[in-house]
Image (tube, rainbow, N blue to C red; front, side):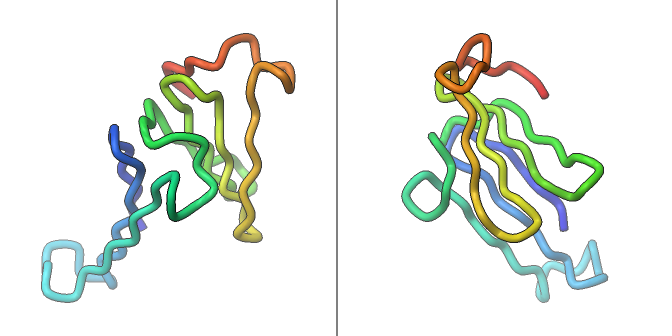
Length: 88
């Protein structure tokens, strides 16, 4: 799938192997209210070599969606130098 970071959460687009045919597209939306995201304002996202997805927040550190489907959060209290993440 294809991930999009926004000021109102993140979304994953599954194009069902037909990337330019919108009729079979499926979107999954992740917000602070519906997932383990620490906040909705996402500045950047990246996938690591293990397939975990990292989301950098404007003011709340980093949230990680693990390959097992769980969420982990890192902030200044965990050793992050600052909670405002500009890029990953």
